[in-house]
Length: 189
Image (cartoon, rainbow, N blue to C red; front, side, top):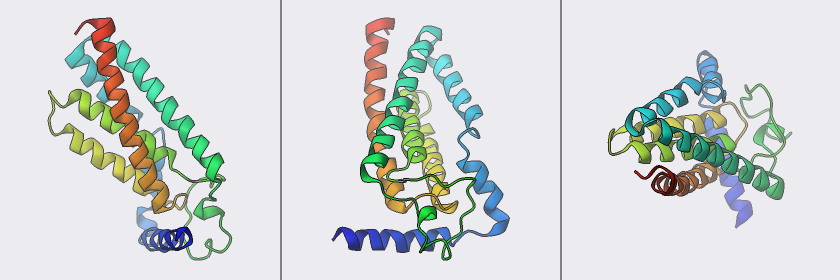
């Protein structure tokens, strides 16, 4: 059963990855770059500051740093534990796929980009939903686009992405709860 699932995952990867075309490659390389969205994160922090104040922003910065560290480290535990090679590291796939990423990496299950972006989207979307009710939908869409970029550039299978998004959503929700608890405990909101 696992072999069949991995076969379907590989087939879906090849289909999605081969939808790409050279004129779009640079856009997807920009989207997949982890530094591209620093201004976006800065805007989210500004919105949190605007709605909650400076003291609360300091709590949010600590909680977000813990959240990203948590999702990143758990992702690494899974990668080392499962040791599933990335598609770009599979010799039998390299001739069938488009690999345009800067580097390949060794293991891919599950995607750190997907888990981090989804955790940030859920956390910020839930913290700001009372003030910007549709923001969460924009953030979730952004997270899915970032996740898809990992398939486009050839470094993750769809199952890596789905598991990363799921783990990120759960983490974002748990750290949203931690953020609310911390605000009540330390800021007395």
